[in-house]
Image (cartoon, rainbow, N blue to C red; front, side, top):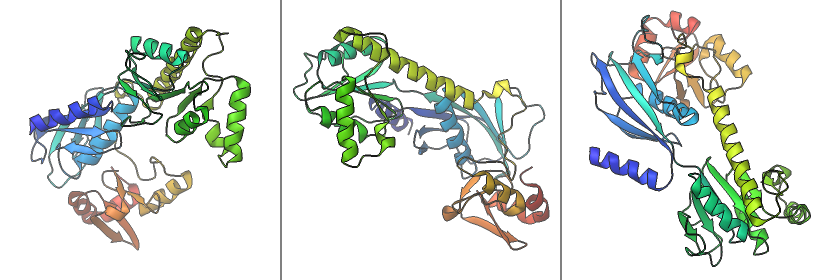
Length: 357
């Protein structure tokens, strides 16, 4: 089994995909997860492996995605009762799962190299590929007649203007440097992806002309605003080498700003020892609108037509997939597991009014 786990990790690394590694390091009492159990969580929230049952998996996925966002490892403790003596830096989840046990899970992000996808084989493209590889970017090139001879430092070279097996993720930066060879096709291909950074190497006049043609064909202003043209930072670059430097400098700047933003929105548990991952009924959850939170506080636990908050542990439950639910005073409550449902039905008046304790 562990060989298959390593193989999965190697496949993700080979494809340039980030993931988080989770391992159970300690358990107390009865728990479906055992010390040494491990899993991989991918950037789309899929869990591969085993770290425990219905109560544990949503917590691991949630914290793994946070780790991928801020780049920091964390130790997560899941227990039926909050510990007043938890060391600083531990993320505590108070969960009354059916097994009644507790476990500690270490989660570590494995971040893939950021990738620059260059569309085109111009002199700027060749220089950018060389410079990007030197500062530890993964480089992919796609252009008609592109070859290893022209792009010896690239990880992937495609001899056509297409994506092939190149996966576009949040850490992908696209540079269209066709410079007269199928410019419109290059821009269109870049816009067809979900990449948040697209630079077009062209004069301002040429870029405006091409983008106007896309607008006339029905492309929205929001879509076209994704294209940065002229490409790169305004440093007065003239030669292909200088233009490549300006583009790489801008990409590094954007990458650093994203990392800083992720850290600002995901504070380290150690900086806030009192922080608990236990949610209160009425607390805003990811994607919930403020007015929906007011509705949650009223006692239903439902944040939207699709999601509800488990009143025992605070986990977000997908209503369409919920296996456990109960009614109290005309309201329907949803639970992540049988243990939470049982705890609610023993004291419904407590949890329906106060929310997760």
